[in-house]
Amino acid sequence: MSSAIQREPRGQFDGVLQIVRYNWTLYVVAIFVSVLVVALVLVIRPPAALAGLLILGAVAALFWLALSLAVSHYVYDRSDLYRWQWIRERVASSPRHVVNIHAGLDETSLAIQEMYPAAEVTMLDIYDPAEMPEPSIARARREARSMLASVNADFRQLPLETGSADLVTVIFVAHELRRPASKEAFFQEASRVLQPGGRLLLVEHLRDAWNLAAFGPGAFHFFPRREWLRVAGATGFQLGEEFSRTIFVRAFVFLRA
Image 1 (cartoon, rainbow, N blue to C red):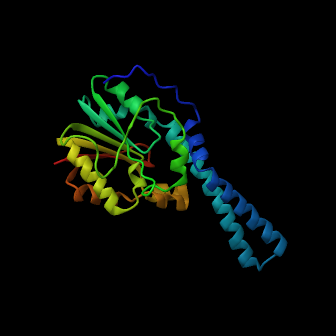
Image 2: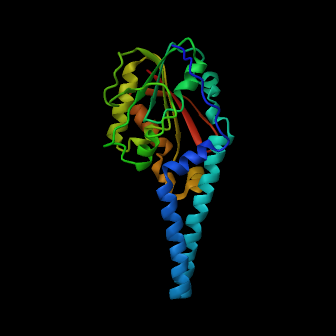
Image 3: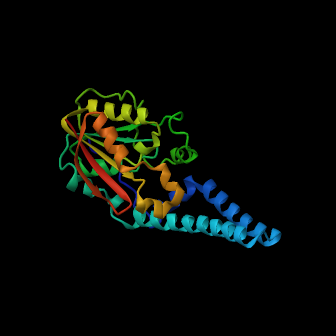
């Protein structure tokens, strides 16, 4: 399946501006609380040790706020991550059927169709408000950036035949399934729809030292590397390859046994 729809050129600050739009309440709250803490310290004048701790906390919050935006700009706007050609070069050169899975904001299907014009590309939207209650996801879903129609799907029962795909791409969406059982159910379905030897591409930030340094407490929204390896192993996948897309993003290529 090929597409006549052309991708719009990606703006120089599109990535970081999207993050601000989807999470603006968090940034407003962080700035308000930090300013309020400093103001209270100046007015109430608590003991020096307590005042120092309060101001240090406020400064740390603002520092992580600024640093996280700078890192996001680097990852999503400056690096080659969103050029996507690396998928063809590192993961699969000529798949026949690609299943691209997202949760409402589809920024990858057009790129995948352009990379694989001879392939059938199926787009599945697995958004589940009960499993993905983050307000940022709801805001992102209201942005109709993609003109391609996706099929709404239950991540526990994907509407595809068994063994019908040879590449499943899951890019920055699997971490929204917070419960271990939900992740395992999703991976089990991905394994079912893949033919033997098929590939699952998982792209995620990890809860590691680099992301903790960049995002502070926000990095706890990500899962550690060992969790993705556990889920994959529990659902019949073998790790074929893993590599970095910047020091903040990890790509896993899991093989269906």
